[in-house]
Length: 153
Image (cartoon, rainbow, N blue to C red; front, top):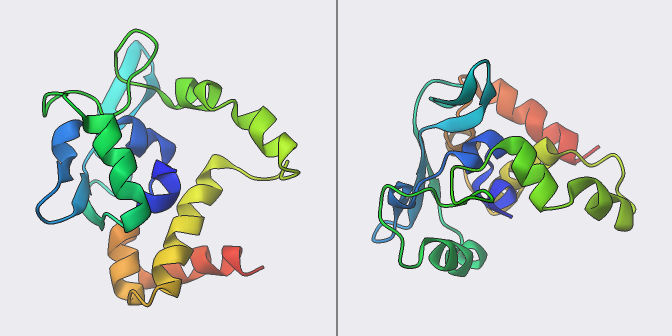
C-alpha cells in the first residue's frame, strides 16, 4: 500500500522514518532507501540521489497514523521482526508477496508495478506530468511518460 500510494520503491518504503511524515503539510519526504548490501544493511539516498516530497492522499493517512503512533521521529516507520529497519526481502516475506499475487491471479505482478500504479493514480487524478515526474524522482518527464504507458498496456 505504501509503495502504491507514495509511488515509491520498496527499498524507499523500507527506509522511511516517522519524521519523514509531515502532518501539517500532508507530505512524506522520501530521502533514503534501505537494502541489504555487502557487509550488511545499506542506507543510502534514493536512486535519483535527491529527496522528494509526495502528497499524502486520503486513503493513506490512517495507515501512516497507525504506523507512526507513539513512535519517536527517528524510528523506522516499518519495523522488521526485531524492531529494526525492514529490508526489501523482509518486506516481501512479511507480505507473502508471491502467494498474495498468485491468489489474486496476478502472477506477473511485481512490487515495482505498485510504484507505477501510484504514478498512474496521480496522473489520472489530474496531477500535472511534471509534478508526477518530481514525485517519482525522475530526471526526465519522458521517463515518467514511459512509466505511465506501462499501466495502459
